[in-house]
Length: 391
Image 1 (cartoon, rainbow, N blue to C red):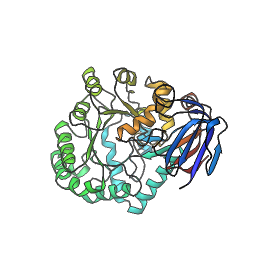
Image 2: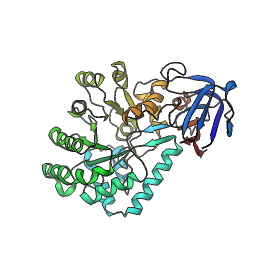
Image 3: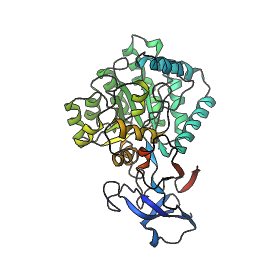
Image 4: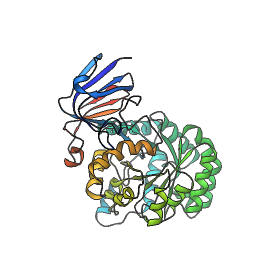
């Protein structure tokens, strides 16, 4: 175990109001000390204790590592042609996922693992120190099982999304496919996953199907998440709240009753503006959710069809420009909000006892993440107290 002190921090986001100003717990001219993989001290730079390693950041901003709570990274191939067609006017439909299913089934384990590592490295360079990873592009028992095993070798946050869309061989037979998910896939894959997810949407699975999948997952010890209300208004938000889901993700087409349900629940609304940008879908109304007291997370939703980006700073800038969020709200949602969506208290925050996951910006304040969209501002990344990225 060794200690590291980061000093001369121009602006430190702790996300702990007891340590600084406002919800971000903001401190000026600050310092922070890591001991091994944990934060052990936060205070004024002039009062920083000695440590084995000292890094003076010259007025740069520091904030918790981003928490990516929604990602689809076990896949093969891409859908660039589909994207081009969509930009030329063809609307997005959920069935495009089947293209990735075919490519993923044809890929070897090594190919899938190499692609996963590539995308995780991209995410890390963009400041994401925790990344959730879903299955869902195999959709046979064997392919879903290998997906959660491959994901589990790289992250603790593994989600079984076998109920992504009915695969081609089950076209018109969603009931039969759900029976396979419930009877075979969930029992065999549950030991390798933490979460169970379902795409509750027209063209994917209806409310009865989604309920069957989620309740089966719960019975096998998995915690529910829901893809809901992305393309149309539907039952996804209501079902997520009813079943105590950790999060409902997308949350674009909602009504007042959906917002009321979320505001009185422990379910996080995870907004994924990269997907709306890439599909020309309308953006969610983050302002309405936040004003109602809903806990909001931001994710990049990296996937080959509708949001092929691992860059949460880009999505944060979209959230400020298009979703009605303030820069402070967007930063909180991409850090502490993502941690809430994963039911974690040790990440998304920089206070004593938390994991030493942090990023330094080539900028004096976190505001620059939205103020300078598209500029690679991530200067350094620490994960578990280790300096893992230097840009």
